[in-house]
Length: 166
Image (cartoon, rainbow, N blue to C red; front, side, top):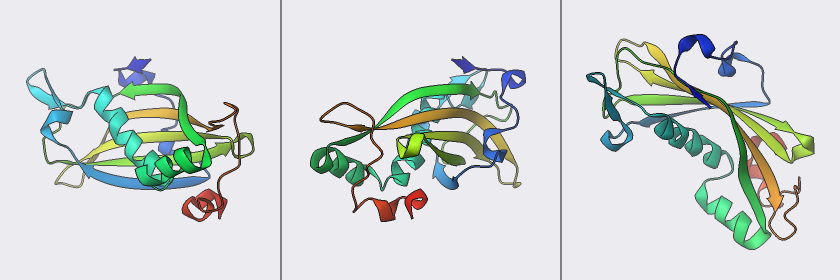
C-alpha cells in the first residue's frame, strides 16, 4: 500500500534506526521519471521504487554480478514484500536534473537468507535543504533457482563484494 499523507509515515524514520549496514547513493532525476501534478513536477511512487532498486542492486555488485549469480550459481535475489510504502507530497516539487539521495539500511535476517532494506528517498535543494520524498521497507530473499528454496549460501566470489559478509 502506498500512503500519500505525512501523518501515516512510520516513526521513527526508517533511516534513523540502527541497522547492520547503511548505504547512501545519489542520482539525478530525468524528465521521464516525473509527473505533472497540481502545477508542479512530482516524483511518482513507481519512480521512487526505481531509485530504491539501484542501491539494492549495487549492494550485490550490480546487474552483472546478479546475472552471474543467476546463470552460473543458480541463485536469485527476489523482492518478497514492499511494506510501509509512502510517497510524501513535496510542496517544492522536483525538477529534471535535480539531485536525489537514497538512504538504504540493510538488515540481514534468517541466517543470511533474508534482507530487509529500509529505504528513504530525499530531494536535495541548492540551499542545502533535504526533503523526504518517499520511503519503504523492501524485503529480499536469496533463493536457490534449482530447488526454489531459500538459501544463505552465497558463492565464494560474491562474499567480498557484500559488506555484511566480510
